[in-house]
Length: 111
Length: 112
Image 1: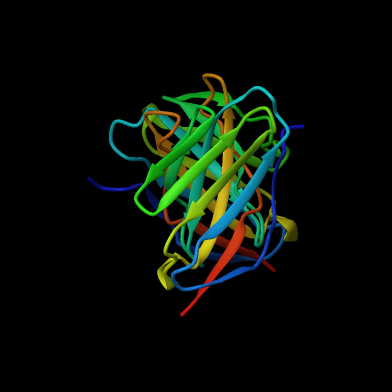
Image 2 (image 1 turned 120 degrees about the vertical axis):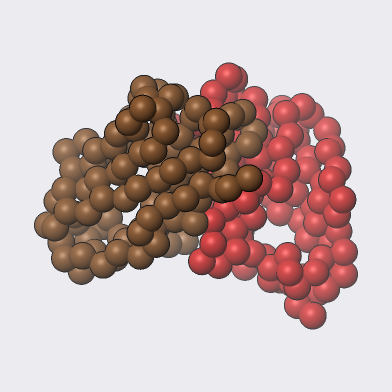
């Protein structure tokens, strides 16, 4: 059974702080990892993808992957109230288009 | 570029009734997915199409759910008969690449 685990939160951070979101996965064959943002009542939108160990930065977002520990994280620097949403972690196997999602972590950025 | 279109946006039905959802993917996207998202959970893949062929339907409750993708473009998902536990948002997504799944707005189904 392929599982993706996330702390459901809510995670509350003050505006301007760094938000750290974490995810672990059970499938050692996972090759691709994704972070989606989902605003309340809206559909998920892709914000980051990462495929190899280490860090990947895109603006205020940094994804970190450690395949040996089966762990992936998302850091949001200078958090803004507009970042308040549920963040979904997902992964897929080699050559697979199928995503397995975690339950999501709800982030609240307090002004 | 137009996004993934879904209809209806909302549907309320009685249990044991039938319901159908429609999805039009982004033009040129060969892969189409139907997900079920229950409140407080992440999306769960129900079925994946590559063009008009089924790639994976292992999590589709086939005794009551069916899906088709005619001519490799539009797709419909049907539930017959519906149960209370089918209340969820049904999301359609499409992609050309594994790292770019684009989701539609979803259909919120309430089964009473």
